[in-house]
Length: 486
Image (cartoon, helix red, strand yellow):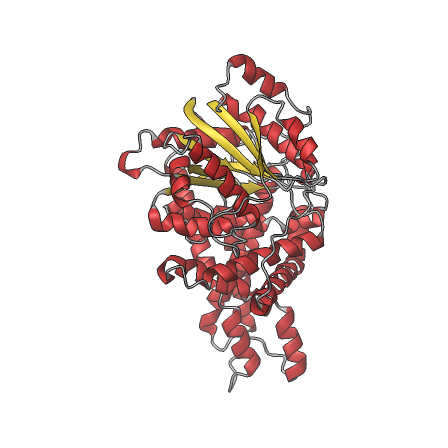
């Protein structure tokens, strides 16, 4: 049952939770291009001066010319997203600055394994919903979805004492028509309850969040602004929206891994802005900070079969097929935690690569739907072969120290790829720092980030290689739930 919040309830929601709870109020700034331009020019000049024509290119020259040029596909798409985003925000200020009240029902869905090491983060997250969302939404409900018999069931049950929080327990015997497992199964069970309760309507919105991703005032403002705009959008109405994932430093167990995860908000500002922001999330979606109209979700559902471990990406492909040009991207952020340790970082990337490779090679999905995602995944899956350590090893084996391109025409491609890679981390670090209690970057953080980029790239490549190995072996799918350091 939906809870219509009164002013008295809203005041009680705001007072709930620890006083040290993060409440970022800064608006996300327009991404800069200075870093990209500087790195591009510097690398291009150095590479051009170092290049020397050879009588015949060796195998190592051809290797680097091919694999180091591959990312131009994703780099170009990401750069296009940045340019479009900058142009839009220069022409007009963000429309969510004065969103007004929203009368539509907002249901926040938070699936959790309710593991004891995740309960603290879950409580922080739920309290953020209760404190921030009623400011702009007249009707809010938080659905925490757990599995029957979860170890933290009693702790989760205590959250239901707050007005507007409902705990949904997925029975052990529950199975979907197609045998879906893991998080998608929990999402589908909650979706079926909404359909049964008559909530699969156009004026009901579902906000999907992870059990470590909180919201702030900027999130609530952006969500309300987007929903209110749809009432007057006419033929341009949107049914789905996604914002930016941010990772405050206070929630990170490891500062090193916090720096390594800067790439994720960087991708939101570029690649996802270019696809989801242009109306069609063809390269996927995040499972958190995902807002979708309840009637649309009811049509698609989450029953994607037992092999689905990247259900958010599969939902995105289905959405594109049924509702082309009907998604949006907004500047509100979620506030989550980076992986607690390197093992979890690798396992997270392993699951992503494993699941995406399985999805893009699924012939049951028409090729035209997965074409762009297939291209992006192919580039991403080749990351282990793109790392600079591989040519160094090959140089020793082949007794050939030349790693230059076979033609100087390739130098601009390499320069663009290097510059975009540095930009992803540089801008992502700005987002993560701005989302933190101390908004300024420490003097050493940008320098450390640039110096450590080869190490971070190695970690990313290692996680992808692990997922690729499991995909090629045809291992049984598993859904890894990492520790939430928040």
